[in-house]
Length: 542
Ligand code: IFG
Image (cartoon, rainbow, N blue to C red):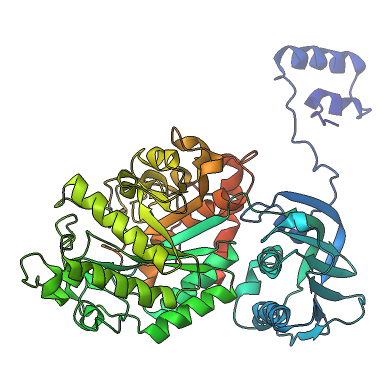
């Protein structure tokens, strides 16, 4: 209904002391001069109040495949119990993981109980009776005022569903000190499955070294956004970051510096195994990369015999690329490759070994292809599938090998050879690219990559000759030439990584920047509660 202001003269009619003729004259005068009626703002619609909890089901990242709102809320209580089925260590761990995510902010000591009768007010995590169509990582989450049922075909799906549960609670749930609450979940039915199997991030720990604690924190953040691959770039010109017992100088000497000349560092094999186990618990595989035959100055400085002239190189702390290469004619080099791959494969339960292969400027095409084919055979001999940056497609690939597309269309050649593709287009996914000309950190050779650029693209339509069925998934690399600290990492990785997570997980149809940016804004408080120093892009209404 619209309200219209009464012209002043009509108010006079109410008064009895004024002669009618005078009133009529005044009315005539006013009618000729009155401004058109002004529409006053309509009263607030009588829409029902929307609860904060209900809004949160529309703020999930990655966006689930299907969300059906239901009536009411489920409220966690101090006595809420987390039941897990079937009995067994893995489901108990998942129950404990959920309890630990919710415990600090709620202040509740959640009991985790195997099995038990379904009673009101409790949470169930189960793989019993789930629909096999949910696959390896899908889940169903049913929240009613009486309880929470999170069911998946596999435990990994339960873990992915727990991340959705976390995001259905207020951002304050991520704080580590007790908050007032209440801790409400909106009643909802979610059935969710990922689009791509490979949803990854790469951490370059060679240019600047990041210790175990930083890597574990990074893994926790990947987990919240349902990512499932951590690619560790463990060696480059500026540093060798993993202990190899048969070639000890690689870490001891090759790991002793970094870009800018700092002390560098490396993971002992025990520390690397700890990272791998921590990731595996979160259903994240670690993909180790030993970049070769290029990007090898740290190794060439550590052992003279890896160089064709038999002279060890000096350590390098600059940022040039392409100048180094192993001596691909030397049998010693293939013994080196075999020893490194053997030791690393034994520490890596995941099925992949990345051998790099990028930016080799000192070898001719035949020498390069010959090396890649021999390295590929060595990787397979140690039970792993080879991954290489897209240039490896110039060699003859095994159908089990994978190429990581980053800057050209050569991945189509890999597809013609029957290989699968990981999409990491630098102009969309390189997290070391500046957001805009004023970004203090990062590079810009692939262009400026604002939050929208990192989100508004689709892997299946980007490259001619590389379609949905050829693509394992997406991965966002953080190269660290200019990134040295956790805060610097945060400012470049977040929030762009959330968009990559959504591209990897959510259905292609219905994805739109205009809708996503509003959801992303809601994650500002959540990232802040997690202590992430994310970049407050002006493109997002934080
Ligand atoms: N390209 C190099 C990286 C790194 C990067 C920085 C690849 C595959 C430029 N290779 O990207 O080592 O220097 O943006």
